[in-house]
Length: 335
Image 1: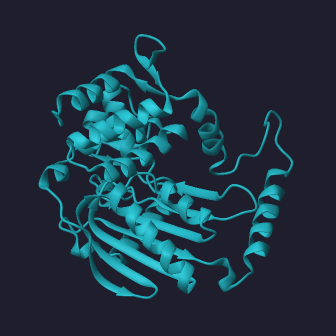
Image 2: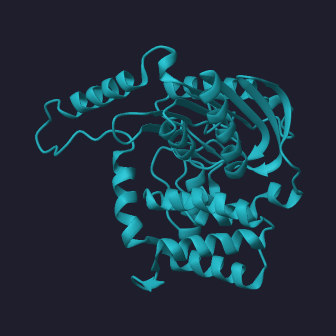
């Protein structure tokens, strides 16, 4: 650990992983489970998403479903190209890792796979799973119906989740990954802002009376991004969550769906990857407005950050580090 200033510290990748795994062991996760979840949050930190990095493990510890115990994942319905699972109240970063492995294995054999899981929570960055599928030379679509955080246009209370959608495509180089929330503000970032005492951006949240607020402790609902268009996308993701069995979830909310397919169902893989690379290069080569250095594609910044931070390490708030270190050292987790 290296102090950057009085409020920030720098950790090497090894230090960050060790802290994450020790912290999760305190919560009752075995060594393999702790490695999987830590790999997820460390990848987020390396990609520059600090709020989805190590601080997210505090959210896991404080989540009410963490204290409710869990059961092994169980299959509810399965065919050669599909599977529906009950998550047994398992944390979503772990459960979706397993579902991604199943989707990849089925798609490699049969060309296509659709896998759903319910009764799980807090699945983390959808890009993590979409990238894994794309690196297996498969096209991916991943969606989530999540906790009701977002108010429809004109409403004063939440009715949909932040409901992210992610895509992954193999190319001749790095995978092309798109990951976006359908809300104007990511739900994971709310607690991060509250821990740091920061104000929310303008126009992203409402308080319990339906009045706009910038106070994260008073945020009762987020707004959809893009107004009615974002709301429409959120409803589509919530509908796909129903396809993933959200109606069987103990809270009737969470449904995670992942689709993986071989490009050569339609186009030979090498041809698809070459055409993808060509298309992305053409987009980056379009004329730029004055003062614009480059046209940046989704996932480019994150991949560049990850390459740099693997050597330089990650940054984290000192207060968050101290809390995590105390939990890891004393074995006392939660608020």
